[in-house]
Amino acid sequence: MSAPGTPWAWGGNYLGQLGNGTNIDSNVPVMVSGLGNVIAITGGYDNSLALSADGSVQAWGNNQFVPVTVSGLSNVIAIAAGSHHSLALLADGSVRAWGDNRYGQLGNSTNISSNVPVTVSGLGDVIAIAAGYLHSLALLADGSMRAWGYNAFGQLGNGTNTDSNVPISVRGLSNVIAIAGGGYHSLALLADGSMRAWGYNEYGQLGNGTNTDSNVPVTVTGLSNGTAIAGGGYHSLALLTNGSVRAWGENSAGQLGNGTDTNSNVPVTVVGLGNATAITGGGYHSLAILVDGSARAWGLNDVGELGNGTNITSRLPVTVLLSNVLAIAAGHRHSLAIAGAQQCTNLPITFIVILIILIIINKVI
Image 1 (cartoon, rainbow, N blue to C red):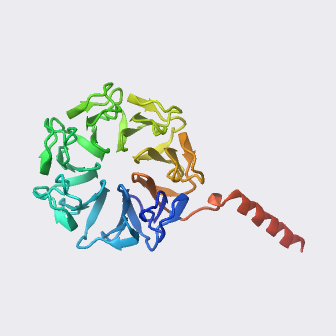
Image 2 (spheres, rainbow, N blue to C red):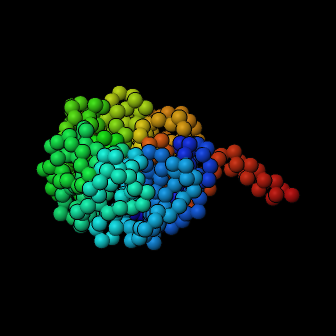
Image 3 (cartoon, rainbow, N blue to C red):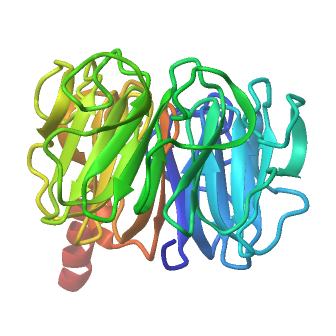
């Protein structure tokens, strides 16, 4: 969780996922309507969620153009969004879920979708949650993991390809300290800084040097000093202790940030990032926060998801037009941030020039 701030959003907005009361895409960050004091954000396929400091959760998108409060939730400490389902972690270590449940991704022993939060069965002592497109993940206080939902590619990590509508144990994992969900794959960061991945691997998103799916965790090649992980649609990201970022998997839109559009089944270095503090992955784009509070984005940008004032796809990181960034998140084709008070450095250069001229003229007069 970040310090409280104001949520911003940019990119695709066809169903109101930017939360600014319109359905018009934006290639610059716009303020989410009516929300402040937000401490966490997350993006789904075409919706967004925010966690307020009072423990309530707000949601928007999928034809709801401004935030509404999710019913029946309090004391929430973390949130996650899948393709069309959402998760909330409560302070007591239990988990709630709502939305699409065709594959059991709500984890309540049914396959019946729910428009209000339901309790995920049999979970306690949960300290983190994550979601893929159609599956869900939880990290327990003892360093083990649970998973539920769609499992056609083995993304539940239990050695089978059978869906589950209740949480099941991920095989062979201990000492896990962070988790992430990709589209149809899953990721774990271990206490020793190494990483594991499992599930769909057509584009190399498991990072183990192959393109073979795995229904049990495999080791991501060549990474031993990770501090954070993130999953995109078909790619993965790692933040290392030195502030650099690695990426692997699909790269058709430059979402690996290494200046190419070639997929990679082993981690490659994101060019020009040496002081990152946080990372996130969208459907076909990626983002990072730098130590100075600025943000960078790279990958697909045809609806403005990079937030740099253009709709030009970039295979290298570009600067997001937002300062004092406290947290970031990405949906499928949109991006989100929590930010503190904005600085004048984000004003368009033409506006700054005009302002300077007016000041000079006023002094002359």
